[in-house]
View 1 (cartoon, each protein chain N blue to C red):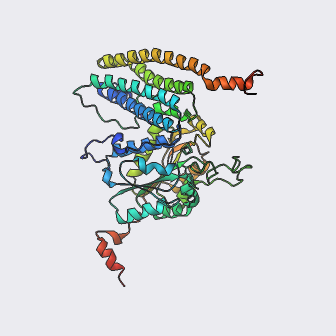
View 2 (cartoon, rainbow over the protein chains, first blue to last red):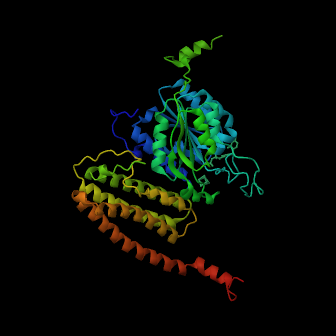
View 3 (cartoon, helix red, strand yellow):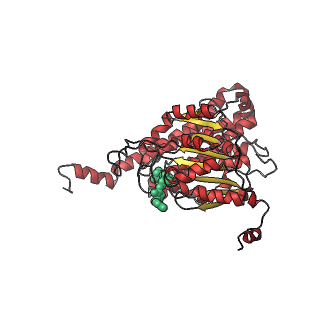
Length: 276
Length: 179
Ligand SMILES: Cc1ncc(C[n+]2csc(CCOP(=O)(O)OP(=O)(O)O)c2C)c(N)n1
Ligand code: SF4
């Protein structure tokens, strides 16, 4: 996958002139940098990258990357990314956003994107809260996390994105940590190189609304998971993990959905198909 | 993570790793200085800016020491030695309300990460060819360390005299003008 014929680009070349304005300390900064490092390592041609996001602090990420990008609609990033991949299978489609965007309002798209197993990468910057709208609980928030918006906690069990991805048919499932930039860069590289739908769920502290998440820098285990292609073994690993393990939980070769109707067709051909 | 120790002692690989580490520190201090400014914390931003300039000077030493040499490309996940910590990892403890002295504390930690790497290299006998660059880097870090301590102490003195603090003292004192 790494194209040695490409000129050497550095991470800097993949970052746009717009500087991030996330809160100082926010985990999203380190994910942005890891993404740019991964692009540089893979020497991806900038014009071949499509970075699609939804809405949220995390979803601002396309503005900061020097490639094609689309800051979409809340919860619809995967739908947009799927459309892009369908018509431009030659492009590297990377979809990014938060846990609110992807697992709450976008939860249904998440399940079906996994099931379709199209060749794209989904980066979820999971801070277990809605950061942009000032701290409401998200599907990954613990049931007893008390805040102004949920004074007694939500009382609802947390969503397990890795478990749902596995059950739905994703072929690459990993968890990373924003505070381990090196491990994270490696995960993103491997996810992009993987043929099929790759989920990289990244624990990314929201230092403003969940300052206690800074503790993750002490508790998260760095790249301790050994990958497997056995779905039962992967399920055991995912469900027995306390959420602090990182690495690839599952990677397998599964049928990839590639809409044939788009191959070699021009816009005119499509228009003809719709003629009545 | 890989720690292919034998590779580290290849001077060019070591220099490439030093270069990559400094590059990361420059990027992050510059970016955080910007976002601190955006969040109206100019005092903390100034500290980040200042340290960023020092990292740039460190990078200058490496570039001068490697003129006309093509440094190898190292996988961005490769770590130079087992106890290595990525310099950005301390920044998770930044916040937009951080005081100037908290900013100094974080910046000291980042500089320490650089110094630990250079000290590790100094301990390795087989890197003689690197010695002059690493030696210059260690000296530079030590000089900056002294200078930074003085600046930090000055900031601390100014802080205790600032009007903000005087108001707070006044608020809490019985004779305070604000009661
Ligand atoms: C259709 C719609 N519903 C709700 C919102 C309000 N909204 C904006 S961002 C957001 C959640 C953001 O949380 P997350 O995706 O986890 O990202 P973060 O800000 O934490 O990075 C919500 C509910 C919206 N913009 N559009
Ligand atoms: S509110 Fe939270 S998620 Fe948003 S930028 Fe700030 S720290 Fe990051």
